[in-house]
Amino acid sequence: MLVERIWAANDLRNFQYLIACSQTGEALAVDPLDGRQCLETARRHGFTITQILNTHEHRDHTAGNAELVAATGAKVLAHAGAARTIGGVDRGLARGDVIKVGRTVELEALDTPGHTLTHLCLLAHGDAPALFCGDTLFNAGAGNCHNGGDPELLYETFVNQLARLPDATRVFPGHEYMARNLAFTLDREPGNSDAAKALAEARALKPEDARITTLGEEKRVNAFLRLQNPEVVARLRERFPEIGEKPDARTVFVKLRELRNSW
Ligand SMILES: [Zn+2]
Ligand SMILES: [Zn+2]
Image (cartoon, rainbow, N blue to C red):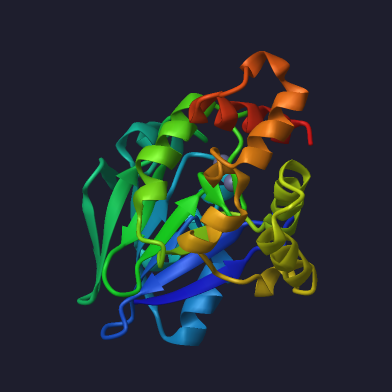
């Protein structure tokens, strides 16, 4: 499986991806925002874009569909529940559906509500597992729930699905927010030396060169995956005394998300 990450160089700091078969060069474009950029990247690598997948219905993840379809005739795939909002969807996906790219790539659709109610992530199994997670999981952070989302559902997606994937899973999010999110983790957990080190590294890199993290690393530096950490809980209690001495993981997650909204 070949992966090309495409930095959109916009204010929202979007990442788009091409996932290609190393044998046939057929490619799936994930969350195309700028169709021209995706076509140019495909051309440079000798890929043929045959499919498009939108992780969810927000415009910054779908705006490039029309240009790519016009240029390549690619089929559009999205969560079945988001198909009407997106428009032009050829294949509506549900949990467990498999997306094949060329001869060598198989991706599993995960139904991952929270950022919106109809959001999906793509999981590549095998010895180099990879997760294309749109606006659900970010490097050191979690998606917001401002535009049609639900923090309780996002919590369930994190705990019941994402946190259970192998630690070696590489994480390919829909936006580049690494440094800002690591700073939030350090605000919540000042003693996290892994996050401090990662923040220094992230600040030294241009966004288009941001490191690809793994889920194992995320568990060390992402506050939204550290819901039982004593320092995270103690600092949260200072801010929200009403959560009591032993808040459950769901409460910690929802309060962290609430704090991050205005942080
Ligand atoms: Zn979004
Ligand atoms: Zn987005």
